[in-house]
Image 1 (cartoon, helix red, strand yellow):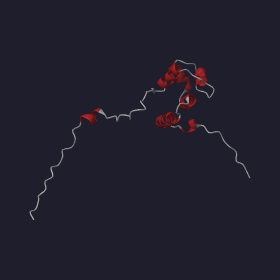
Image 2 (image 1 turned 30 degrees about the horizontal axis):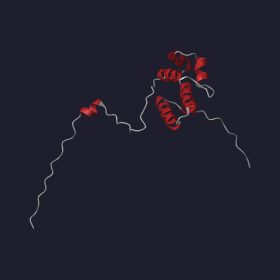
Image 3 (image 1 turned 90 degrees about the vertical axis):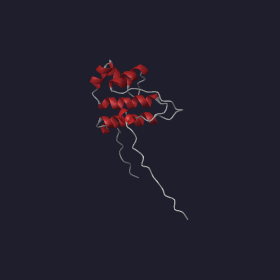
Image 4 (image 1 turned 90 degrees about the horizontal axis):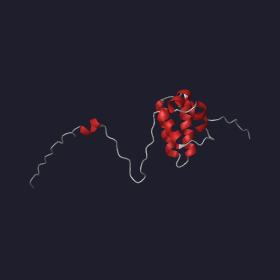
Length: 127
């Protein structure tokens, strides 16, 4: 049996836009469960897509410290993760597992009047 050569997968190569990065992070955070290493790895992948030097400046960390914290061997503090997320334009939110998420309604949609109901009349024919 002939074996093929495996190539290393790098998710960062497929993240071409901000929408791609956001969708990737959403999926990773949904799938990660309680695995903090997976979450920080996902944040690291998204960070590599961006300019790491600028991200380091924006987060107040060194570039080397950022690479180390978000590497597979890294174990960043929660504060570091929050700084990186903030520098990337994201924030963390706690969502209750007991309640279903509320539906977000825009202000304009909330103030719109519902369409008028048509009055339906029926005639009853006598037998």
